[in-house]
Amino acid sequence: MNVETCVLERYSEGARTIQPALCCPVDYDRELLKLLPEEIIGKDYGCGDPSRYVRQGDVVLDLGSGGGKICYMTAQLVGQGGRVIGVDMNDTMLALARKYQAKMAMKLGEDRVSFRKGYIQDLALDVEAMERYLATHPVTDHRGLVELKDWQAAQRTSQPLIAGSSIDLVISNCVLNLVNDADKRQLVEEIYRVLKPGGRIAISDIVCDEPVPEHLKTDARLWSGCIAGAFQEQALVEAFVEAGFIAVKLDQWSAEPWQVVEGIEFRSVTLTALKGYGKECLDRGHAVIYRGPYAEVRDEEGHIFPRGQRIAVCERSFRTITEGPYCEDFIGIAPAILTEPVPWCAPPNTVRPPSITKGGRQAVGCAVSAACC
Image (tube, rainbow, N blue to C red):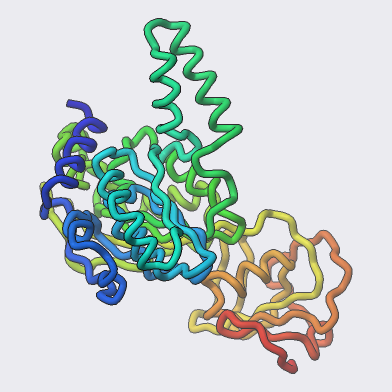
């Protein structure tokens, strides 16, 4: 039995009967669970709680949404105007999630959750649409296979399951490890594609402290049990950095391993990161001050921020620092009057003279307010 088939069968069984071995103990918000049907709560399999990263008004994408537990929790947090999309490949899990969709819509006051069938490593392919196509165009020869591939390419372009730059927050709960190693790079690139500029991720998953040896990777039972396909902890971080994410952080880290197999520790982590606002550098007089406690820090683009110094940054970098996960560590100062934009990327340690930002606006703790400098 191959890995994909084993994963489908094991999680289909998990939708029919509770499988305790598929999940780690997680302390979910009890208030958010009150609205949920007991069947969904009991048949959820995860290792973290990415719902805690949701903001009001977000468009959230849940990868490997299973029975819908995290989606329905998240739907309470996005509020009116927000939306939650769950993507899963398992028909039995999708049926469980959709079973309660109408009842949950009544409890929420609107239907703000949808569930779509697709591969999390190929978020453009609408699998239900493909199945409808195959029902009338069965593949029986090479020509049929070529026509199917042409149809898939056209569908991904014209009607993608998840459009590019359409999502505020991508979350997942213990599913990245279920994807074949050969597809993991595409998986991370797809997450990057669907996020809006400034979009965030909160990925709860299982990582290991040492690489998983090949003889464990070929064990389909260990793969479907979230073990054999786990990212090595540093490799998880590097995969998202290589895809273009910034502010990549192991925000949650389980002190005790969930399982130890052949001396390798497997534990739950939650990775957060940000999709930046592009690459264009336009100088308009902005500055930031790194608060400390370190003597200096460096970002992904090589900018160096010594503690306590008013460092010149472009408008894009200013927005990234003051609106993203860096904001608690920096004081951002926008000039009282924005200068005309000039293409320029400040060399490391370029100090912004106070005369340029006097009387400007100060961004402290992620909120911008009027302040004198």
